[in-house]
Length: 382
Image (cartoon, rainbow, N blue to C red; front, side):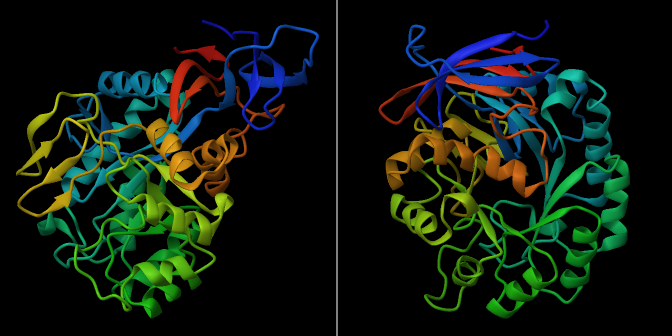
């Protein structure tokens, strides 16, 4: 199917009706129509960009037996939720499994549908905190210190497509590793960390720029003053990604993040897993039983921690509007343009001539985002 040609909608940023002309997969022209035509009933915004997707609707990206058809299934399902770009996120695992997983992911990019929506991969671990609570549901037996030589093997297996690494800067090896990643174009995020303020600031000095799901990946009981949250909030060079699904953070926490960092220095992510879209119940995850409740919370009862999320990114957009009072433009930008800008992907993330025609057409009912149509490079995928 080719370009849809033209879209008429209400601009999410101005609130005024516009005509968007599309050809060659790109936005060619955006014109305000004023009162010359009937006012459309849908809003138009950039396609969502989710930098942390562990899996979706039964497809687990950390499965070493993942096939391209599985990736395509997940991509098409995510597209239907308004996500036009995302990073498959790979969790802590053995060296052999990580090599195999990244080879499978790289192979899946030969499929055009997959390639159009997957601009890179995110490695979350294995270089995270070994401290109980801070590593969450990651398998503790595979947690290890950062190794550039080892990571280079993963990057080779991934055909150079690892764009983000989440780690904890708790060891001396971390800082040179961060510097090397940054020099190679990989964005380093701090997460699942019990690092001190000094270690966090040193990590930033060496190039770290993101905080992965800030407020989570943290022990339930921490020191009220000396903990890893305050220094990450205080450092102006760190952009937090947050999970606003209503389970991972309280409304008050999200309001504080919004007030401290501001709408241009905050990213919404989903952290959804392969359980998203499946029925509530009990499942196995890395050898432990986890429970998904009717309202979408996923928890490991034994470790007393959340085990990822099940609600799509559009849920976070509605919630951040509800919790902070921010306008729809800011909420969508936290899940699109802010992400594209952080990763230097100038071809997407905003509604402008010359950008990819990744567009979401939607209604707003209260604080619920109702996706009606989705375009990826000008092609209708919903």
